[in-house]
Amino acid sequence: MNRARGLLVAFTALFHCSGASVPAEGDGGACFPDSDGLIGGDYIFDVTVDDTGFSKNILTTQNLANVTLTLKNAGTRAHGFKVECKPVTAPPGCAKTSCFPAASTVPPLAPGKSMTVRFGTPYPEGIYTFKSSAPADSAVKALNDGQFIVM
Image 1 (tube, rainbow, N blue to C red):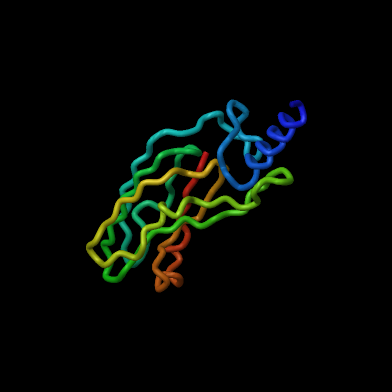
Image 2: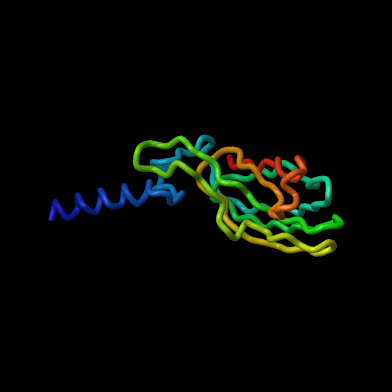
């Protein structure tokens, strides 16, 4: 019985740090401690994008937050929204990269179109880069250097 309990604890610890960004109950996360002691909340962002950049280039939330983001394309060509993955420092056995969920990506939208997405932010805190998801926007600096700050 003790051996089975030990294996369960070991498996739980391994799973906890295997890339899932979910904290263990009450400990702030064995892989990614929470620096400000706050998690969650609901955040709403209305962002307009045009051919020269985003109307908001800094978005800030807590980790494990619920986000509703509406992107409106006011440009003359297609633009979208995507948050890049980032490397994270973590103990051995923990994920070394943190990513926003696929649901946070807005595909390139035609001019005049808008789209609303809902997603949760990852647990690891830090500054994630967001950019347009339209390949043609890769040469426009202001469409590739937004900051999504997870606290």
